[in-house]
Length: 156
Figure 1 (cartoon, helix red, strand yellow):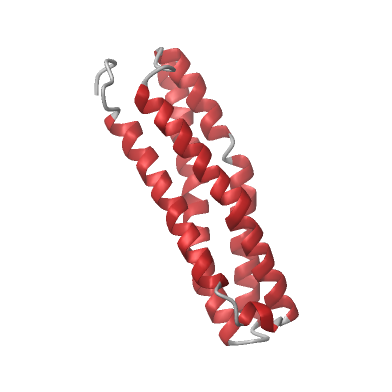
Figure 2 (cartoon, rainbow, N blue to C red):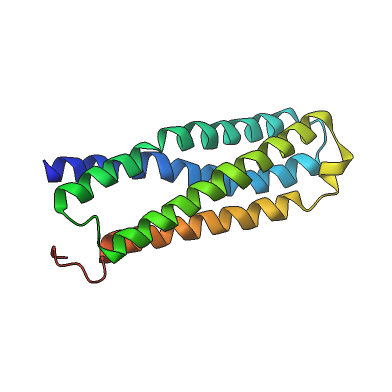
């Protein structure tokens, strides 16, 4: 059962976190393009699609920690330091996405749709790029911790 849960956990991570990290990383670039070309329909459609990918896959991504907790419980490692740090970092990544990236994307999308000058002159594209970098760095760190499992006694 542990191998099955671990497989579900890894698949959920690859299939949900991967698309969010890519779409969120692409959003600032497409936002700069849309701001530089007001009225560009394809650019607006791309922004809308990237935001929808981030929003939908973030919701589905809740399966990752659920399968992760089930796997950790099955392995008997719920109290391990590497897992606790991974949980904290995963929570931080989720907070960055839910509290800053997704709302900033919504603001940017609304501003581009309305051709708002406030968005065009704002540091929003840079801020989104920075937040996405933090989000991606948190996930990369969690991934490394999941693979290396420092101090683990369950084998590597």
